[in-house]
Length: 331
Image (cartoon, rainbow, N blue to C red):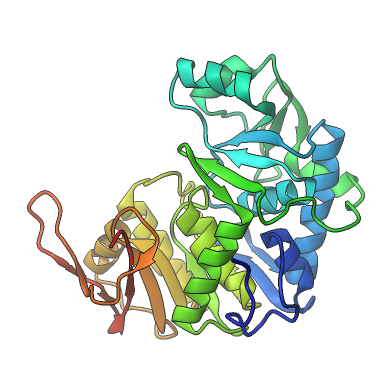
């Protein structure tokens, strides 16, 4: 199911991938805010950087069907990487859990590289070092490139010409394999359309994704809903939101970002919401709605107003700063 009338900001009737959606919007509109990185990209800048990165990845051997293994946190480069891979027609994948899964992965997929943060690579990927080049994700000027890296992430963006033409990814193409769960571009667009419709998302919204982008809820429901409506994605970088991370750290940075950016929507999970409420910090006045993931699944649970407590904790009302949040999970 492609996005059609669900999203008010999208000028065309359909798109095959998130990269295609980004390319179709008002070029001067704000597309991405990453406050901890001092990043503010318009749709034109986001699209251009993604296409430059895509060109660099193609120079490194990435092609339609290739796979990049990554455990990149919720920094701007994570989103750029996923958009760039869509231009190439390649797939992103979270690291395999053990050596057996790694061996199976290398036999069944065209693994082309490991995307890592500075000099740190996911431990389970060490065995792939001789199979593919490592692209070092350097998130600052003082970042350290690991000895095995063949290119710096930012060097690729700065020195490669933008990839021309439409993104190679189709609706049926894999966007990612997150913890073994496959997500196609079509599925991500559908999740985004559902969320945009439920939250009445428009171009003036700022959507805070306080959950890993290496998950259907993060890249799909949160980012896809924002881009489908021509809104802005806000990324709180917590030394980076990897997997579940540490709720207290996520909560502190999320509240800070909600306040500093005037974010109007929040996408998070119950762990983060509980920790946010425990901080005792005045809630952001701009927040008007949001979505809380309370378990597996991607169905909006209209009748749910509180999440069950875990390990003896009291049930958690799905309200923050007086704003009623929507529940999403398995019906």
